[in-house]
Image (cartoon, rainbow, N blue to C red):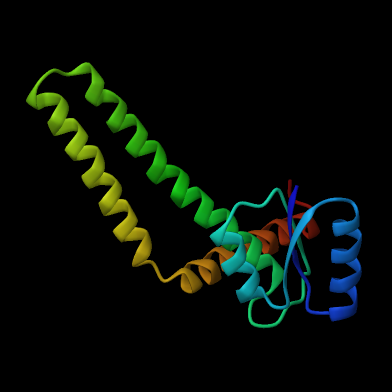
Length: 145
């Protein structure tokens, strides 16, 4: 199993990594949130162990960023696969047209995700999560359902 450990306390990081490696897992480690996010987006991991309080990018933002990036990539891949699969049902130029359309769609989606300011997207998603938690917490305190 491939495991990502993101921990800024070096002693705790060494202890976790040593135990996981002894158990036969492949372990990658990062000492801050930005490095952890870079590693998480560069290769697939089965498990990520993330500290909550990290320098440069806290643990919640790191996990939210990983989920957002996976969702964006998943939507792009689904659209590409659906369009590309239709190419086999058409003969001649229609099939070629659908294939070119699928490849162009994938290109456009990749260009769009490449232009996203991910840091701002992560901050915005964290603000929505926090405001939703405050609203839910506030209504529970007031006795509302």
